[in-house]
Image (cartoon, rainbow, N blue to C red; front, side, top):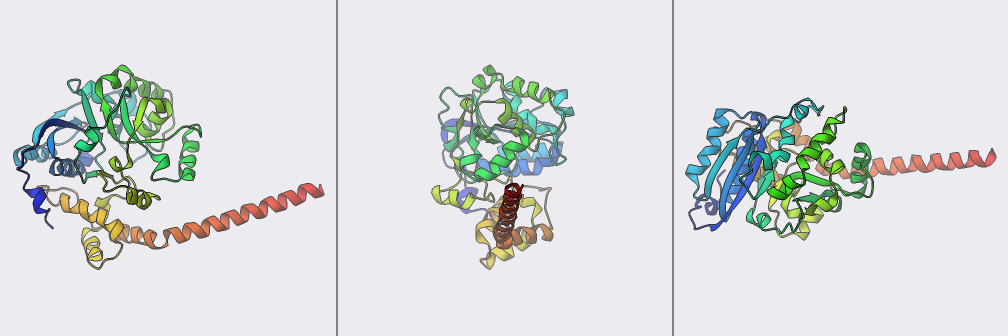
Length: 346
């Protein structure tokens, strides 16, 4: 599978403004970091500088990223820098599929103080349009921009359950920290890193989404600008298709629900050729198209089981949810009637 010719011939003149993109990564996700960075570079119509908060990336992973600078004219700099490690982040209890590296997005102003503005992205993203569209968003007097999940990809019920689980008041909105547009000086002036650090130090139990939940619990919605959904599009979320119809094209695709590297690439390609499940499989297939361009690309998958589980959910998931909801509501109504009848007789 090859990239489109338009993307391979990136020799056209780019704009003078430089987009600073920051990642935070350890060696576990260095392959995903390379794909995210490559997609941003190939789809950018401006110069790009890539900064990485290095939480333990091997020399091989670094060399693969440095190769972007020699291959593409619009990459003006690639910088790796280790953060000042905070022991509380290392000790804070987190779910097994996370690492303490996720907290260091909050340390971007301290790690790269020379920057004025930066775009932070998780490693499980894919940039499908010009990243400077996000770069040009006006933050006004706010410290950063982030997606408000509540009005976009997830239902109010889903968000309400998430809020209840972490203890967030129902009236507060819930943001996603996977893509952030950061005003470096204001972010530092508002002491956001220190406030989250203080909040985490006072907890003993893990949060489902550690740094994201912590940011929602200790930061006010007035401190950030809600970003357009196209800058943090979650293709497999419950309301994603409805949101996709409203936007011309997503700029940043965030694989927060289903990870492309957990799918069987050959099976995905075959199903796509037969025009099966093309909505979902397009987002998986497109990701693999870029990953194939990485030299010595480390991560691949033969997980046929994961692929079929995904397809099963695409076909029967909504039906199962509908049945489960009907049964659950029926039991609740029956219980309420019985309980009410017993109270009347009492």
